[in-house]
Image (cartoon, rainbow, N blue to C red; front, side):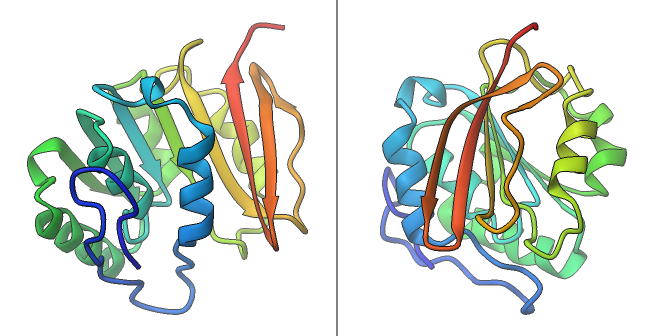
Amino acid sequence: MRVIGGNVGGLNLKGAVDKTVRPTTERVRSAIFNIIAPEQYVNGRTLDLFAGTGSLGIETLSRGASHCDFVERNSSQLKILRDNLAFTGFTGQSKAYRMDILKGLGSLKGPYDMVLMDPPYKMAEISEFLVQFSKYNNIFDERTLIVVGHSKRMPLRESYDTLHCVDSRSYGDNAIKLYECREG
């Protein structure tokens, strides 16, 4: 797995420690960054939830984000993520947290310009997670773009409280939805 674009484009990252971690494919990462305008993250703060290898957040840093916070629950995977940050030279522009995402969201210092999440497909209910996530208004505001990767076989709703879908794409079994915060 490699960084696709930006300052460290072409560098190979360490992969997942076990088969339960499913890194976001290069095809999907490329699609995300072809859809999203660079102004959404360049010189901005990003958050990579369910970070795994860190490939999504590292991609934002490589393309000009000023900072990225990474959240990963698995301690072995977090070590790989930190190795990837050191290898790409982004340790100083990032912070990697080991925590249960819903329990730790309240401690993060948002709002972020972009939130990226590609939860495990085995996660029982991504929609239920998004219902809970939508309550953490310290993480996002009306200018935050939230990118959610998911299996096409587990469709997501068009809205979760104040989060409303603004774009949706599919690539084989992989799908992405982009949400923005809007009242009503």
